[in-house]
Image 1 (cartoon, rainbow, N blue to C red):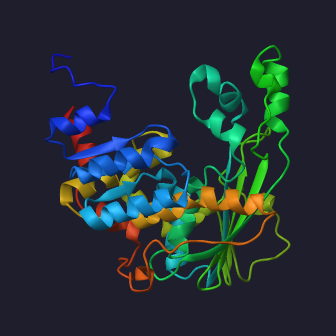
Image 2 (cartoon, helix red, strand yellow; image 1 turned 45 degrees about the horizontal axis):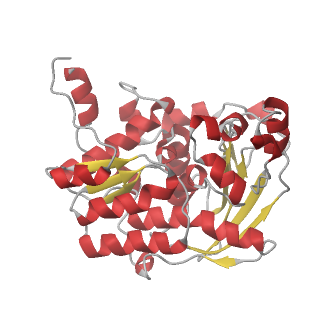
Length: 368
């Protein structure tokens, strides 16, 4: 396009050595997220990395300790925290429409059989994980929005976790049917088809997560908020409030959330809908915009290092609980007690911190 050719390399340390970086986005396989991020942070470069689980709790502590030592800002790039309905439900919860929130639920429910079984062909790291581990390996899409509703790391925290796994049938049968002559059809997959996880909070509230990626199904994140005065449910996209008939069916209420959006649309989405751009219905654009604005403004990103550690550790803890037949496992407090005092959320919610200034990505897009 007439511009200088970008520098490229297969060794990220060469990028660090060049210097002059404002920020880096890490989008490698899960296993390398933290080691690469730590190297960038120790070089003074602000980092955002793509979502995923982790391999050990110590890895999460390494990330936290690096931030506490360097104070280089870090952002966990969980795009589902910026979903339109997730933010509307959060806004409604903040305004008391659901009363006292008691329980949230969600899941990563996505038929990934083709991607996983063909991972040796398309070089996708998921296959290795599904062969060797049995856990909720991808908890953050559903848990990120739930953490906002439950005030996790800001006056509340997760204290225990229980996980139970079903047997593993889906991937083997898919491999036998679609790649009968390849070694993958003989492979034993450790990952159960359905993994259910229950989290208990310090304030008594609970959350349920479901990993469901190896059986035929329609896509859903199943985001649900339950309170003493009402609920929101993503499956059916409906709101039900106290006083309405308990005998109403989902068919009666399906898609009625759009009516509530007229009044309770989150301010971020009100602004975004004036000129919607980007993939995954806008959430990719919004999460990148949040990261870029945090870099430009020099402020703490909305999903920080403590949030990242809390989200990622669920994979390892669920693996431990599944191995012990669903026994409870303690969830570490990565804030070391600071969650009790970290009550600095703005009136709307902490995801809105970096959204008040001009939306610079959109401006640059207009200029191009």
